[in-house]
Image 1 (tube, one colour):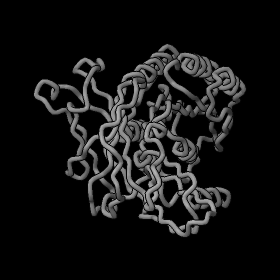
Image 2: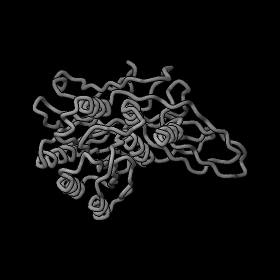
Image 3: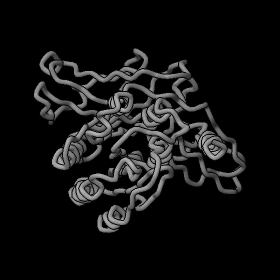
Length: 357
């Protein structure tokens, strides 16, 4: 019990006060300058028809985004793996009421912002594999399915592979080397109890450090029986940093109604999907479905309009015309902004990096 409490305290202390990347400054001769943060909220949006087929070739003008009922202007737009289109320039000044999510930084003294396209470079997939004692049966089949999935990710720039039982193992950190990631899969061994939510929290935090589109794919064979972190906290963090969570679970986990409900709620809230595989063939189909999903997502972003709400902000994405309203939209449903921050530094700004929210 004492070990559990120590781990829970460590996780709590490790949680960021905000989800942005801090401004970096170097000493110079021009005196103090003020850094302010301008929000950039990024959404991954799937559009499907009544049969579940993806709808392609939509335009930015087909979408409308509201945050707490306030209409937002789309700043960037991307379909699938196509080029990112910039539609709205970065605001000249940070509005104190616009919210304080992680974003592009701009020097108040007039330095140009970092290239906006740099925030959307590539796509990254973080895979989290259950190696607890729930996985003794079907372990090798799961490894095969994950390995095939990694090799098939042609439209993804980088992949990371983590495994978990009671603790998280970063078997292969984010890399473009598929062979290295597959080796990480093959070297995993079955462990003891399952601390899924502890380890998923750490995985989401790792993914949030990188620019561009990220998703987390979880393969779980059973319920969580060792975490100190509640799943609601993990889901809120994933929503707030804009990372969809895809859950693939076996028939064993399906027998546990609480875990089933949690997996479905978490994936839906973050814009991902939940799958329950009754056989190794279903596992492969689930991975193929995720791969197909990643290739058809629309990526939209916006700078939030002035909004006094410092708590949870609800996001709604809709299609405008009557012709398109029959289609279904899947994306995250909101985020929680970080505390406002600005910094006066005794130097000109050197470099500033940010992670889209």
